[in-house]
Each structure stands twice: as structure tokens, then as C-alpha cells.
Image (tube, rainbow, N blue to C red):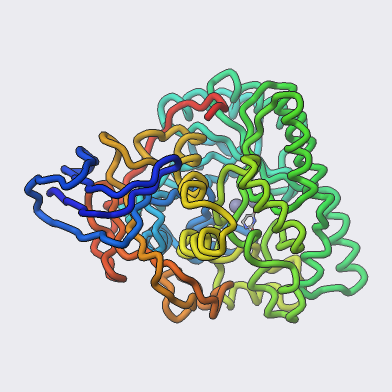
Length: 460
Ligand code: DUC
Ligand code: ZN
Ligand code: ZN
């Protein structure tokens, strides 16, 4: 199967030009002006933008969490991803405390194998670091191609590790050529505030927000960066939300330390005023919570200054019935919201169209940096001869409205209901196959492939 895409405006992290792209099988084989090559299919991309397929490095599909499971499985979640211009996701495997990393890997493979439509990879969340886990790091990296190890500084009793384990893990991951990533919030401070609010009868979703003030994230981010500095371990902070945390990262730049930062689309476009809606605010109960306008400004600035390298989603949807588990106690509301389908179009509309970021920056933070930081470049994250033919053709003028009525995520509400966007993903190509064409799904489940990743040295 071959495809010739004619006259599109090709945008990469560094280029912007009009040309044709020829795809043979699953790879891009030729790029040039007025290509005269016979193809099985020709796509006219005049007046359209062509970007590398989006890569979302932070999603939770079919994940057991807070007494329930996230409502998108591999089939529904990766289908929704494709509709929204994301051709690859990185999901999180959660080690069960007391069990091995390999046990957890098998469990996640059971859920993902033969079920994905987009490509995917895993981060391994180490929730119990000990001599046995330590021995598994090398094989995870070298045999399984899982090179990033997620840690939680919160969710005590289920996911959190202490600083002793953190430093031990960093030492080993550094030695084996991987990267440590973190949910950086001070779990003990949060637990104190949650208990205090519950004891005082403050039980609405607003108190989820008030139990995780900015300082809980800023403190943990600084502590994590210091431990990474001491161990010289490549480091990455997931879902950063606020100015205080970002300031810690700006500060470590002075000692020539690089700590990568991811924010998520919701922290750029939504704010904490949504916690003023009674129980409806449960839609936006996530950790960390939404923040203030000044934090949004900091994050946009961080993107343009290069301190924030990636915009992800932390996609972790729950049905409204599941959110109601916390109707009388905010601490029982499953944390997370649906966004896997919305990231690319929201960021295009709110970022590029509103003049906050350039088109090149848009590509950099939605695919190129993800591929570089997580060991997949140049197979993924660029438009180049020899790269996987993962492409999104965007109509930059088309207007549309986000709604649970039309989205493909398995979630009966949208955190962005009624938002009007300009810019729509029209055609999505994954490894040379048309996945989405004008709002129609053309791929079958099982097409999505597990991508083994290379070692990362913390330099991009
Ligand atoms: N935060 C969420 O909101 N959901 C999943 C896990 C997390 O850290
Ligand atoms: Zn998290
Ligand atoms: Zn997460």
C-alpha cells in the first residue's frame, strides 16, 4: 500500500514548507516538490497543515484505581486518541506493592495485547522498591524496552514510595540507562489536609482542591529535583500545574541540571473556578487539581522558554456514576478526567490560533520532544525519510464544538463541554494506514503496536 499526499504545508519542530510526501508501506520514503510517483491512494492536502502524529506520554487506560477502574479500555481509549490526532500513547503500569514488576507487566499486556488501535508503550510505576525490584530494572530496559520508571510521592499505602526508595531507584535507573519520572506532590501534607477537612465536615469537591495547595507540589518538585541531582539520574516531572513548582525547575537550571517537565492540556486551559459548582465539580477532580490564572501564565511562559517540554493529558476518565462514589466525601471521588481525544485540537486552537505558541512549538511539545525524551526519535515524532508514516492532516480553519455527545471517549460527560475550537484533525495516518478519514474510523483493533524504546541519557 502506498500513499501520496500532495501540496500540504509540512510542519515539524523546525521546518515549515509546502511539499508532497510519499509513503511506501509503513514508512515515509520520499519528500519533495511535485513528486511524480504512482501511488495506490492520493490525498490532496492543499491549504491543510501536516504534522507528525501526536504522542501522548501520560494516559491511564483500564487502570484499577481508587476502588474502580478508568473507563476507557485499550480499544476505546486508543480509538479516541486517533480521532483526536494522537497516534501513540504511553500508559502507566502500576506495580502492586509486594509483587514484582514483571507480574505487573504481564497484567498490563493482558489488557493491551490485540486491543490497541494506536501504537503504545508503557512507563513502569515502581511502587515498592526493594532488592527484588532493583534486579528487574535492567531487564525492563534492555529486554522489554521500558526505559522510564514512574514514582509517586503521594497516595500513601498504595502507590507512594519514600525518599530512601526514591534515591535507591534513581541510583539503579541511572546505572542501567533509564529515566525516573514523578508525580511530585507532598503526600503526607495532603493526607493531613484531607483528614482535617473531612473532620471539619468539609466534604464537597472544592475541598479536594483546597487539600492540595500549590506548596504541596512545589515542595515535592524541588525535593525530587535535588535527589535526581545527587544521583545524577535523568529526571522528568509529570503533570506540572503551577508557578511554584516551575520555579524550582528554573532554579536547578543554574546548576546546569536538566529536569524535564510535562504539563497537561487542562492546566493550560481550565482553572480552579470550576471547583465552585457543587458536586458537578467532581468532573474536574484530578490530582494535582486545576490551579489559578497566574499558574496558566507561568506554564505558557515555561513552554516558550523551553522549561516545559511536553503537553500531555493524564487521561484518566471515569463515568459520572463512578464519580458519584464521592458524592458525600471528596476523598472518594476517583481522580481524573477524559482528554486523550481533545489534547491536539485544544492546544492547536488555544495555543497556535490564539497566538500563544508557534506551529513549530506545537509540534515540538506534542510529539517531537516526547519521542526524543522517551527514546523513540527519529522513528516517531518527525516527518522525515525513514520515519514511521504517522501523520495528521489538519484543517486549520474548520470550527467545531467539543461535546460528550460527539466524542469517542468512554465517558458520559466532557470537561470541555461546549468549547468552540478552530482547527480540526481531518485525516490521521498510522504507520502508513489511514486510521481516521473525515471523522470515520478505518482501522481495526489490534493494529496498534507496542513500541520498544531506547535508553535515554537525559539529553535532547
Ligand atoms: N492523578 C489523576 O488525576 N488520576 C490518575 C492518577 C493521578 O495521579
Ligand atoms: Zn499523577
Ligand atoms: Zn497520571
